[in-house]
Image 1 (cartoon, helix red, strand yellow):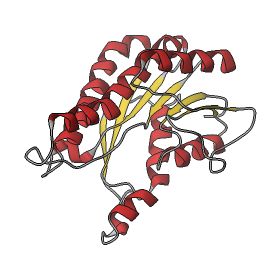
Image 2: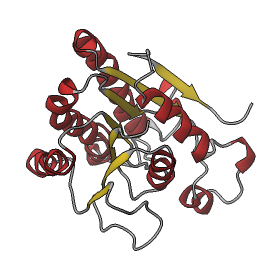
Image 3: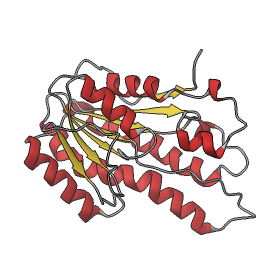
Length: 229
């Protein structure tokens, strides 16, 4: 991983900083992309880190600007880790069509937009990699999970379609499908849950970086990650 240039979307959220620190510890050069303002602490820093804040990945123009900045700073890109997304629970009877559209934009459109902007750079890499974050809950949606699960199913389909499209170019495309990730926000929203059964962010980060490595031979895989054995 040393010297590989990695772009991480959703880099300021619950999982992003853990993945960023794990990548930095392995010697990667990082482009950290977030919609909001970057936190004053908690992210890797230094000349090998580019912070791109205020980027709305549902806007293709803003996304293109971000990846142009990555190319200008690092002269290339080796891997894209699509962590950007969000969760909300809405039953159909108690919600609206807008709930479905919102989950679609936050989870699927962001991934499509980032992939599209990254592809010209990844095709030039000798070992381009894309790692998307899907969802284990999308494999069998429960009550209230329809909008979120449908959007994440779209991420799964994007992963498999891109893997087929890019196989001949040597660009590997895979997705991790975590169940509940053990983040402070999830603990706060579900204080009575059994946290010991949740997915540790560090474990998920290691798997994502393995898939983003030059040595990875996987492509088109949807890998469930459901917590400690």
